Image (cartoon, rainbow, N blue to C red; front, side, top):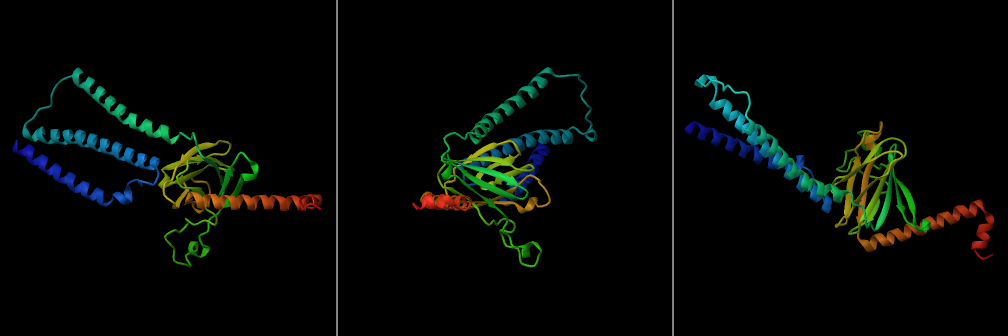
Length: 287
């Protein structure tokens, strides 16, 4: 009895040390909690499943090691001689099944919500290229739709090690994607050439960008700010040079920016039309 108590004490102390070390490294090794409801749900689900797995491991390996220690041959124990035990077989079939069902229920709820793109207030098409991103704001009115490319903006001097690398090394772009805070934005993710992947950790979302296939995801970001991500599918020699930067703007500020971009696009279309059709300029000016 004393031996068992001593073993239990040592195991408890070891687990305490492991837990303390784990908490110290949690920020570096664990998932991000993120800023969206989905990312927080994924974070909570991850911690729940991890806790269940750890508890299963502690119970299984604890029983195994204690049994090996207390029933070792040096203490005079002889191996049991039996062929089967129907009660144990039923137990270790039913118990894991119940555990899996218990893990499935919350997982299904989170997955179902992740794929629910209904009632989105705006749509953005995300198209991957070697090695940049194209963003298109999709609107039923063609005149209100516009697109642009987002390219790596990290100075080449940093890449060539001629300058000190900043905290946002390889995470700067010339034109970020801008979306409004507190609105449901649907993303249509695809690719033009090879398979890419669009990933923003703080949003808790990632989708493969596959040529000829459109994958959907969505996000509601409650707080304005700048959020960064990367392509997470090896897509060629410059795979590491296609970062993702999303600027979440207050709703009023986003609406003003959007109106300016639409006006720029309309003016550019008119300019192109006038260059290709001289009569267009005369008619549009009332001449």
